[in-house]
Image (cartoon, rainbow over all chains, first blue to last red; front, top):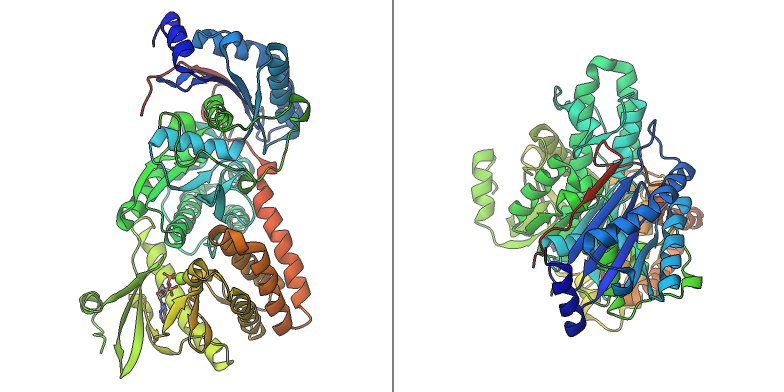
Length: 356
Length: 244
Ligand SMILES: Nc1ncnc2c1ncn2[C@@H]1O[C@H](COP(=O)(O)OP(=O)(O)O)[C@@H](O)[C@H]1O
Ligand SMILES: [Mg+2]
């Protein structure tokens, strides 16, 4: 990494833009510093809330975030070798997400912006997942498969915004896996090193055809019937059947997602495919999408695992792009939006990204 | 004629000109017993388990044939079924000369109102016949000289359910929003007009339910759950080298 002094001089001469980004929509409080000049990502600090038993309690998360926010900001600045004075703008994820968690990030961002007289940039969390994936993979005009604990969508850019071409009609993919794991009595944490408890339990099993329903509706998937059927199968067949059920559940959930992604490609005619979001760290899903893309002659790259999960870098990158296109918000009007839809956000910088 | 030997059918199909490649099928044009016909071949997918894949391909092919036939008999405007080979994943139907509604909407600046309205009444007539389409996007309507045709019944079901009908309406709306953003809202209102005019008293309930489904899908973001990557609660990544 270049020394602080070198970067300082280049910053003043070349109009370098430096953005501090804050992520706090769900389980991760992330703070990152990103620059418009290489090496772009100057620091990436994450504090993750780990629930004691399965479900995530918004108020506990908020308390945890409040307790780590100050040191996370300090650490991000010092790791980047940047002072608040050298930061051009502060970006924050204002939604979608859990209210109490979002409020912590918004409060910290507002305070920083006010105290140091910095512009505040509102960032949509779903958009940020997509933008960090475009930055990270180098694919500029892809169809995006965005899968996380709370989101399952197939999106791509058209007429100034990302449009949703397919999505879950009920629960999200991550939610399906987590809920099954919890109800089946698998112990948390459900994801270790990118492998889900359902992946691990599937290891000794094999695919049982006809056991669980495969539901694709047009460009959409539906997972709630799959979840119910898997839990019912477990009650009926007993714990000995768990590996086979996990294997089958995963096979059906991922295959139907890949199918709707393929439908999205057929519908949009896009020639590139990107996998983004936390569940995007899953190896089997990455592999299935890769098979589909190569059979279709489409260029495919999954976001690197590091940027698949929630992080501050994605907020800072998106914030930097937005800021340089004039998108800022008055701190007093920076309301959180728990249900902020991806297709409500303008993306005037598309298809360019950080560094070109 | 189509050879019945599965080993040879692929070679035969490949001798026919390719009309298009949809999401799951290769569609070719040929001659079937003197009729200009479309050969729809569902390709095996390597990303699916072979058992799942062959079951899906054959059930969808069988279902498409059955429901196409039923819709045709009920007087809904769909291509006529000519032949079906479920174990091969092959369906042969009458060729409909025209352009996809999707393409039509992309190039035409005017005159879309009556067409989209007709799409609505066509879907309502299908629903009336006890069939839900399952993939009612603008890619699955053909604009022919004598009006609109509905195609692609691979995800269809025999059903009178309000919920399933509402999903059809929702899918049409989303396909307008995602591919024809500038006219989407007006076009959807026109579509609803056509739908309600041909639907029974259940039409209003379908439309209301479609609105609810739309909100549900988009707003699952409010129900985020835990998807933590590492076991530990704290980790920090150092700056990393840049990339282009
Ligand atoms: N009966 C038909 N007449 C003319 N063209 C057709 C017919 N059926 C299908 N096609 C063409 O083939 C394409 C794919 O067919 P479709 O049945 O929609 O398959 P998929 O399930 O792969 O989308 C259509 O978009 C259309 O261009
Ligand atoms: Mg089709």
